[in-house]
View (cartoon, rainbow, N blue to C red):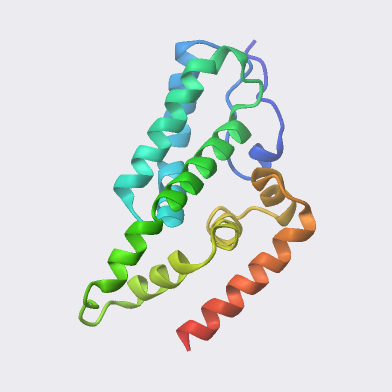
Length: 169
């Protein structure tokens, strides 16, 4: 009989966790289930599908190296991808200055306008918004992933929504 999957915050957040068995087969299953969703979330955080693919690839590579020692792969992967997105944001300081000098695009669509507003949010607010409204996580689950007190998440979401409402009106 196959052992039941572990029950964690990750499983309640619709992030499946494979059974306790380890090895290449279990990792392949985990990769197949998680990859697309992680790339979509990372793309929302970093603003680029290509960069998101790189971040998620790096996270899975790091996981594979430690696969035998990881007891709860769902949260581990979430944290690794989130940290990778945070690192990308840190490296973009100089790039942002150059982008501001470029002429604006002609009439962007509504989707692009919304993504642009989300991209300009501070990282913690952007992460809270993406994890809450895209991944459907609770404030408690977001706090666990971001490694912050639960009381920090609600204000970040509220500030982000206020900023977005102001910029979109």
